[in-house]
Image 1 (tube, rainbow, N blue to C red):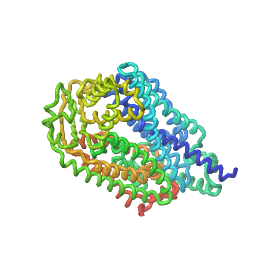
Image 2: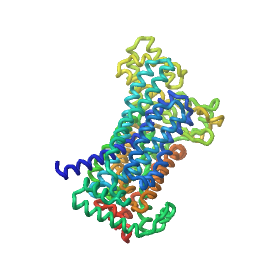
Image 3: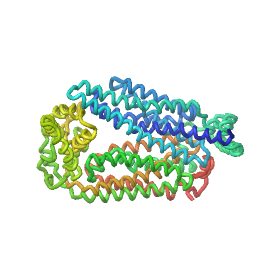
Image 4: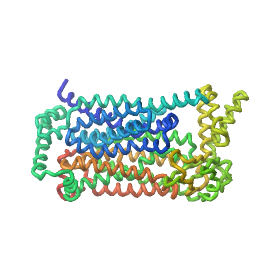
Length: 631
């Protein structure tokens, strides 16, 4: 085997292992969504505890991103990748074996800590190891693996969800058997991700240390040996010399502690510009609304006019589009450059968000305030209503949707209900045709279950029908399940959560209006698809390049930690503000806010960000030391 082939295989192996790191980061983000309903069923955790379990990953990730850069400078990039893999594998073990709240919370914190370390160290490692001409493609592959991890988590969840629902239906009124099936489901979802985590751990044991870190530690011979496995001989010698010259220039400057390094980032031009650019790009990346769009996609599509079943289907397809479009970014990032992709991506996001805002404003402006009427229906500090039965303004004028912003204490939440659209009525017609083929006693059982699903009967009727549904053929079960979602969408059931004390229920805002037609829902799905495609091609890939390429060597550890902290903090603030803002002002105002933030992103990319395609990290660092950076 030729030396060139060996170098290519070694680069491929290195990129593949780092890609597994991106896959784990995506799994960190996505796995709790399918697991949460079964975790709720199988455990005695309060709503407050479940919220902490969900949020623990973000807390751990923020902590991991803060310390990862400093530890990677001290211990090395490869050891920190091994630590991140050990944290992930250990978190899965702790979560799977947990029998109470504290171990479960600890496992989720470890999982978040692993993700935070991966988000800093893996892009840093790739940037320092890959040749300048392949660095963009390698970091784009990291983003592709991240999106693949989110999709993989969804498929893992769907696999165990199907098995769990069959087992729960077969259990019927046997509460213990239903809880056992739910318990197996959520534990199996977490256990399944142990396999890619173990592969990542195994692979990290065989990758080389970053040559730039070795040079910084005075181990030039080892660095040259590592580069010789990744570059042709002439390029290896030139790169060693370039790294050495940059380090000599750095060592000629006074050594600084962490506090002084942070002060230097904010005072010297050669550090201020790349640091501010990286922070703006990472903050704006979250301010596009990407996380909220992905998290609340089904809700947005239902408000736009799609029925629950169609909204879930389109939502899954759009998430897959996120992964597919990242492939195009991989092919374009080294051909067209970072600035071009960011300009195209942010322009596409702005257009998509503005179209969404116009679409939603068209029907949100026609909504009627019914807060007083809804507040009058509150009984015993709870609200349970079926929109078909409630006599609210416009509730009888064709398909309508009711949106309620409510709060117990200081925590605001949003609830919604829908009367059947023509598509939903078609689903109910298929269900009715199926029911007519069943014996009379089974028809009566299903009729009582439908009443329970829509809030007109006791929940026990819904449990009693589960064995019957489990005995039906797969197509019949799917029809019944689709109808169940339509019945449940008509109901709003608001009750104080366990552990919330005696805080009174307050209806902050309630509006009702016509449901947009299916064409509006399809237009919204098309706009969101455009948003996701534009994000995948531009910001989704380039954010990791900005994080790893822009920071100069002298401030890289502190700078990357601060920039990623801004990224995650912005995402957390937007996620927390999304529902209250939508409840007060409507979806269109949220979309316009995101479009404004994306405009800042576009201006930054178009006028201030230098093109780094094909440049070594040392060349990029010298670029900021002279005037005319963005020229």
